[in-house]
Length: 87
Image (cartoon, rainbow, N blue to C red; front, side, top):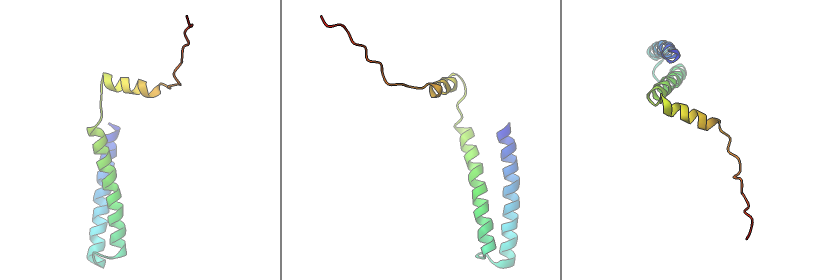
């Protein structure tokens, strides 16, 4: 749920940034500093959106996720060496 809200907000910001970039390009040319700045900001927003999409796609649910979470919480110590009595 939180991811969908975040994605919706990102989509709004992406659309706004795209409009700003296009308007700046029409006024100042495609290679103006302002257009480059908007383009770079748009790239960052798109990268964030793609990251959320990728995380959603790779999300694992169920018992395996519980198992992995428990395994991550364990701290592993040096193995204990037991000495046996010599005969």
